[in-house]
Length: 220
Image 1 (tube, rainbow, N blue to C red):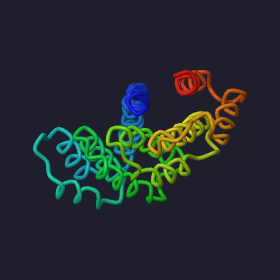
Image 2: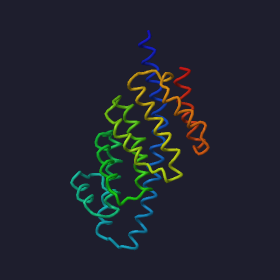
Image 3: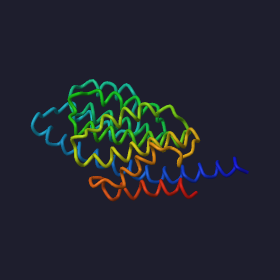
Image 4: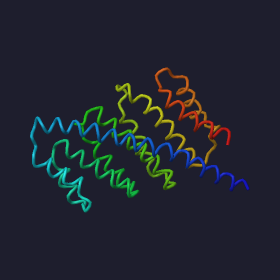
C-alpha cells in the first residue's frame, strides 16, 4: 500500500509540474522568438544580408527539412544561425527528442556574442524545457546540464532574478522527486522556499507557483 501511495503521489505531482512548466515554456518560447525576430528585422534592414535571410525564412516555412540544411545555415556567423538553432530546438521539443534539444541548447549558449539578454532567455527556456523532460522521461540525465543552464542566467538582469530563483527551486524539487527522497526533510530545499517567499524582489506569480508545489509536497 505504501508503494502504491508513493507512486500515486509522484504521478499526481508530475502532472502538476508538467502542466505549469509546459505553459511557461510555450509562452516563454513565443516571447523569445518574437523578440529575436524583431531584432532580426532591424538587423536585416541595416546589414542587408539577403541570401541568408531568404534561406532562413524558406527553412522555417518548409515542412520537409533535414539536419544538413540546419547545419549549413548554422555555419553562418550572424543572428540567423542562432534562429536556425532555435527552430531546430522547437522541432526537437515537439517530437520529444529532448536529448537532441539539450545538445543544441549547449551549442547556442557557447556563442559568446549573444549578450546577456539573449543568453539568459535561451538558458531559462532550456531549463524549463529539460525540467519538464526529466519528469516526462523519469530521468536524472539532464540534471547537471540544467544546473549549468541556470548558471547562464545573468544576475545583472532584474527581470530574470525571479525566474532564476524559481528554476533553482524547481531543479531541487525535481532531484528530490526523482531520487524519491523526503521533501519535508530536505532543509536546503525548505530554506530555499522560505527565501523565495520572504524576498522583496521575487515576483508574486513565482511565489504563488512555488507555494503550490511546496504545499502539494507537505500536505499530500
